[in-house]
Amino acid sequence: YEKHKDDDGFVYVAATVREPTYTSNAGQPATVRKRLGKGKFEVVETPHTLGVPGGLTHVANTGDVLQLAFGFRDRVPGYGRQMDDVMAWRGDFYDTDYQYNVHSISGEPVVMRQWGPDTDRRNGYQVDDVPHIEPVAGAEVEIERDEAAGITTYELAIPRSELTLFDPGELSVRFAFMFRENDTRGRLQWAEAAGVFDHWLNYGTFAPTWAMSYPCQTFFGIEP
Image (cartoon, rainbow, N blue to C red; front, side):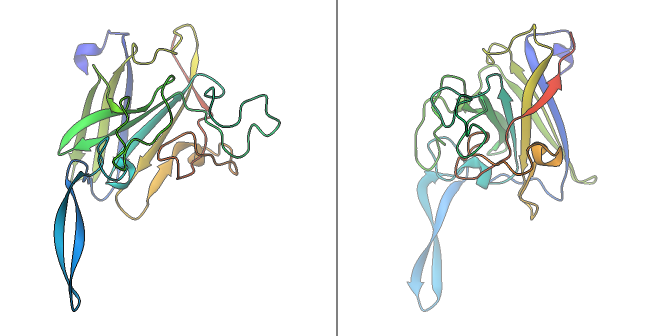
């Protein structure tokens, strides 16, 4: 992103993943097996598309995805346990203000907004059309694959205007990320690797909300 090197109007994220393959089925038609009898089946395409908002199957289940989470408030108002609850760190709590899915749809990289500070916390897939789950306007992203080295590289720029809760005066931000991988490793969570809240899982940091994850409780410094 050479053209943005002196532009403070973006938040930049880069990640390198060493993995055997990079795979994304998002954007492909969903198929089912139709039984023909006597152990025979026919693969039939459905009207639904995999891994896209309003389509079928959350993108986390369609291949390799980088998920990003930003937290600016201790809790998302109106969802789960709040900080004045004596059980604030137990059960159902939501600590992510913004969550994004970075992946490919039919070969084209995209930064997809999952949640924002004023949106609901629906998953938005499973043929559930949710208006706020959409590509981030003005975001730029590249996903490159080096097959010889077995490395996938993500580079993206998110406009700061997208992150309305971002305070330039702060010297740190609460941040988390997760790699949803297509191979047998399943997923890699930064919070787990960093030893953040080893025994406290929740539904409100990453989507889909039926899969518990470690919370967004790591602070990253920002250069003044």
